[in-house]
Image: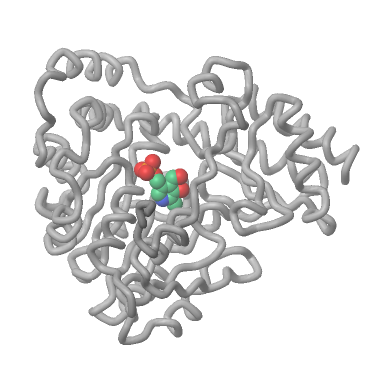
Length: 370
Ligand SMILES: Cc1ncc(COP(=O)(O)O)c(C=O)c1O
């Protein structure tokens, strides 16, 4: 007799890490590889944040605050909502899995766009729920009308990823607001805003204001992209106290470690510096997208910290070779085929020097394979 794991397990997609085979994330950080595959911040954490982590490390014999009281209060002050509307987690991914456990089961349905964030397929797979993937529109943005049409009495969750990973496209706030108003009350709307700070069209505070009107809405945000804390794992959800209670019920009590809590509290004290880093990334976006256009390649209108680049008419055939050539040049990117978009590349912005190397290497690769 061998151990029999549950039936759902075999259908859960595995995660493909954004580092080359045989390398750890630490190897990549120490080498001169340009790691442009995981939409991280190229800036190291601020010295004050590192200091807060070191200070917190001296109390590692104690469990962390299970309620993350200081962090939730800092977030509540920042977003002008009640701490009871905020939950924190070991990265915002944790909320997706917890929401799946708390809301889905066989017979239930979850609706999301595709291609979108690679974690969403896990939610149906791990619970036996039915997933409905709604294809993106021609411009690679969410088709909100088509998503509304898929909602039934069995729908438990609808996810909108805004800006969308991997395509970078952004749905303006007024369309999101109208969409949420048309979703029936029994459906939990998850607005995954991991990249919201990188878009230039709306004030990121506007979606927070929607929480007053729609108790079935939850916003997911993260310290991984803008606050340089991807390695520590801390994300947060803003929504109803009922959502908080549900995800808390299915997670372990000490979901965010003490170093992450201390780091996030400190990082929130340095909003001006973080805003400047975000502006630098937005300027890099314009530079990279112009340079890629000069190579004759199309991109979507990215509003995130990465570009989604079409490799052209025969993109699907040349994708493997282009990625291999970039890897040889020390540039690590994400292959579209693995993200649901064959013939495309997803490239995060690194430092200006890394971005220049990427553009030059892409130009060389296209000369050989394009
Ligand atoms: C759309 C989206 N949501 C959530 C996450 C997860 O972020 P975290 O590091 O907070 O788990 C990512 C990370 O890449 C993402 O792209």
